[in-house]
Image (cartoon, rainbow, N blue to C red; front, side):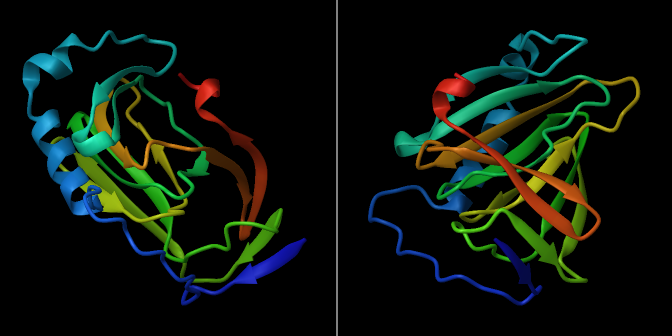
Length: 182
């Protein structure tokens, strides 16, 4: 199935259950955690691939401390129904994202319209929060320096959908479940 998604497309957001963390609260948590220099320094860094340590997030959320070797990235993906936040704890990360809510099911290929692409550089101490089904990729474009970041999601990630992108065409490639990355 193929579809086209304009920049102004929106999909209704389900109500958040009482007592669950908001994306703003997750952002506050990742910022405070990223400021813990001892924790950040404790992450083992690998020159060949990303490293990560699972952390205890607020009120049942899932959190991760992630190390990014030079030139690494996530590829295009989303976090399904989870809201989230991340902050750069060391180095600089670049985020490419889509300013459009995509349909969550029933498609394999979407043609994106002009104006949906966003880019931001997130230096040490900078972060962002995002809502459900946020499609993005995160990159460490430095040729020489590691980056470290803190991420939090609620509910804990039920799945990650991976995409490929060629120009304006976004294609769903596969779906990962928690057992694939834990």
